[in-house]
Structure formats: C-alpha cells, structure tokens
Image (cartoon, rainbow over the protein chains, first blue to last red):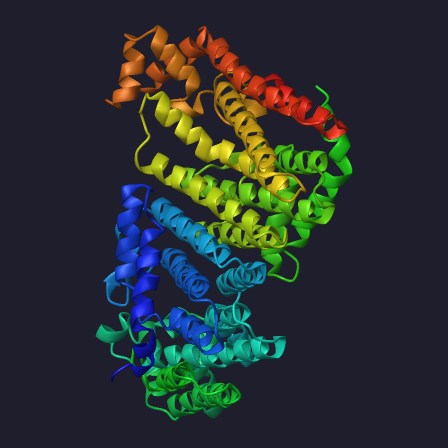
Length: 320
Length: 320
C-alpha cells in the first residue's frame, strides 16, 4: 500500500537521514560505516514523521524540529542496537544486525555512541524541557527492558502487557509528538493533547507489531512466526486467546514454563493465529487509533493534520 | 594522606550521593540495588568535587550545580559499567564489578539506565549549553573507547596517547569545570579558563593513574601490576622508557605484538618500574598540574579556589 502520510514530509525525512548520518562524522571509520549501515537498514521513519508532522501542524521552528526528529530516530536506533545484542538477534528487518557482524564490545560501544549523538541532537533543539522529556523517555525505555529481562517472562497479565508496550514503544511516540508541541507556540493543554495523540498511536503501533508476530510471514517480518511466545513473552493476542481458552494445556505449559516443548509451542502459536484473538487484538489497536483520531479533530485543519490522520489509520492497516 | 580539598564540599558531596541514589527510585528493584552497590563502591568523587568547587568559586546556583555534579559522577559511573563489561573486568577498586555478578545483558542495560539518569540530571541544570557539553563529552568518551577498541593496541605514539587520555579522563574533568562555570554569572573568558583548568588536571589525573598501574600495589589498585601493558596499551611510562631504550627487544615484542610471552612482559614491566621513566612521567603530570595552578591564580581568592589548588596538588601525590 502507498504510505501517503509520508508525502508532506518526504523531503524533511531526507534531511533527518542526512542529519543522522552526519552525526558519525569525524569519528572512527568503523563507527561511521556501522552508523551508515544502521541508518540504511532503518524502517519507515514513523517516529520522526510523527515529530515532523506534529511540529509542522503546530508551527514549530523547522530547524529545532529537525534536531528533535533526528534525536528521536537515533534514540530508537540506539535502543535497537542494544536490544539485538541482549536478545542475541542476528536479523532485523531482514538485514544482519550489528550484533551478527561485530563483537559484543563493539556493539555496546556503537549503541552508546548513538545515544550520545541522540542526546546531542536533543540538546540542539535548544529546549531544556525537550531534553528532560528525552531523558525521561530513555529512562522509561531502559527500565522497561530491565523489567522484561528480569521478570516478565511467562506473565499473563494485561497490566504487565500495557506497561511493557508503553515503555517499549508508546513512550517514544509520546516523546516525538509532545516534544514537537513543546517546540511550538502553543499552550500547555495543546502540548498535553499532542502527548496523548503520540501515546494512543504508539500503543496501537506495538499491538499491531505483536499481532504481526503471529500473522506475518517470516520473510517479511524478518523473524520466525510467534517469536515472542517462543521467548516466553505473552502479548495481547495470547492474552485474548487465554481469556477464551482458559484451560488450554499448551498455554498453561508456556505460562508456567514447566518444560513445554517445540511442538507444543508450534501448536499453540497455530491455535492463536487461527483464533478470534487476532481480530480482538486488532480491534483494540483500532480503538487506540480512534482515540488518536478524535484528539486530532481538536486541532485546526492543516495538511499535516491530515497526514497524521493517515499515519494513525495506516498503523492498523500495515503488514510489516 | 588527608584529602583536604574535600573539606569545603563534604556536605555537598553527601547531597550528590543522595541525588545519585534517588535516581533509581521507582524502578526495578534489581536495578535499585545495582545502583546502590555501584554508588557504594564509588571512589573519591574527584569529578563532582571539581564541579562543586568551581561552581562555588564562581557563584553558580547551588541547586543547578548539584544536578551538574550528580550528572558528571553518574556519567562517569555509567562509562565504568560498560568499560568493565568490555574489558571483562571482575574487580574495580577492589570490589566485584557488576559484570562479575550479572549477565552481560543486565550490565548493558544498567549502564544504559545510568546514562539516562545522568542525562536527566544534566537537563535538570536548566542549561542547554550544559546539555550540549554533556552530550559532547559523552561522544568524546565513547569515540575514544571505540578507537582504543579497534586500533590503539601496541601503538607507541605520544599523539595517540594524549588523544586517548583526553577522551578517557580529561574530557570529563573539563565537563565538570566548564559546565560549572557556564552555570555561574561569569563571562566567556572565565568559562574558557575554567575549562582549561579541568583539562590540565584531568590530563595529570590520567597520567598518574597510568604511573600507578606500574608502581601501585595490586591490593591497593585492585588490578595486577602493569595491567595496561599486559593488554597491549602503551602509556606514558612505557613511552618514556621506549625513548631511553629504543632497542629493548621486550618492548619491540610488545609493540609489534609478535607473540611475546608472560615472562617477557613481567621483565619489561619490572624494567619500566625501576627506570627513570616513572619519574619523567610524574614530572610531566606535575607540569599539567602547575599549568592548572597558574590558571587558578587568575581567579579571585575564595576558600573554593584554595580547595581546588589542594585538589590539583593532591593529583600527583596520591597513591591510589
């Protein structure tokens, strides 16, 4: 499908990529090439698009907004680099991870470097509030990873799930939209509405990701079907499935982690894939998106507002 | 020896520790205990003392200065956590490293979390310039680590050495003193003088560290004698030794990394330890300190200025 929400910011997203690339300049050559590889392998730039469109809609200064968009996408990139190391992932979006090519030490340091440059761009917005939001988002993301690392395996709890996807994804969408509003000549109430918009679509985005983990094709998603559950991570489709089938013995084995085997897992993943749980999870994602669209209605009309609506709608329609 | 430079900031350093500890609050319990362990095992707090004394001397707002001091020490702590992981170090200052107790994944994430909180405290100074200095210092430190990781083994070059110790240590002292001046009601020239003071004593600090790596007792320093050279890292004492003994075959073996063995290394370390190279390196550190003391003369008298002079003098007198 055509990604229409990118049209109004296509040129600006090119500027963001250029800015991101330039952050490696003057540093060690291996670092420069690693950063170029990572930026090349980047996704659809949804997060910087949210920042650019929100700021465009609210009248932010274009240069400061560009720094914010670069900061958000570099922060996202840095967390992926350390994530892949922690998970031992060898592929991301079908490309080899840094982790697959480099030693753990080089991967840790490259992630640190990208954090440093993200912080630099956040400071270059010239706003102390943006810096504070940036640091708080980073704290939330890392604390979420630590919590997931130490605790969340095999926990079938909605509360735990929503906390997790907020930390993992919605916090960064929230940063993108809220900080863009902070850089705009608008009142606190508008900043809060922008923040909530980012929150709603960020939650939807991660729920759809978790659905695609069950329904996507391995080649397109770049990882095996049901990979979350295989790692003991209970996501929304599994929670809905569990609600409807509280006595499924395979599900119990996974939750209690009592030595379930590969064929039990395959069977459970297939059961979830073909159950009503998928539709229920997508419906819930749609509700988040709808709340986001309702918030947008509160803003005056602009082409950027339309593009944000397209972006929000796209989230539940995408297949990667 | 008594560490007199700490006297005027003893209470404030307690506040810094409290602020650092409070940064873990509300997060995962394992993270809280890891941070407390790291803060407990901390050193003499020379970096935050530089920030507090410089800001005290120049009239910085105490609350903003406290945030800066906490940011600097947390940044230092975070880099140590990732360093120990990268080096596989099991001890630091005689205490078990996080790395010795935790998995690499948990160690990476804890370091990331501490970076996040350091960035938060830097933002809480309320100064965009301080944030930019903070991000630049982090960039310099990480790029230095990457360069060292990829390249600097077995390189006997002064230029390389000075670049390395600037990145590793002086950049953070410079951040402490320059950012403290930025938070003070002083002109740009005074900020620049404060920066240079931090630079000079930071360079001296690392040179003395590198000397202690040869002359220190294992029990006190917490690592084997000559550990830098054992890892192929050529520091100032080795450079002076090489100047005086250009044909020492053991030194050549180490530089060319052509399969030198343990007994060659032991012999070379003993040769350096007992040579004039140690005194020459300490003399050079003294010259850095002297330049720092000369800069201090330019500032009006205050108890903090005296304490900074004590601190600078202490650097070349210390034995840990």
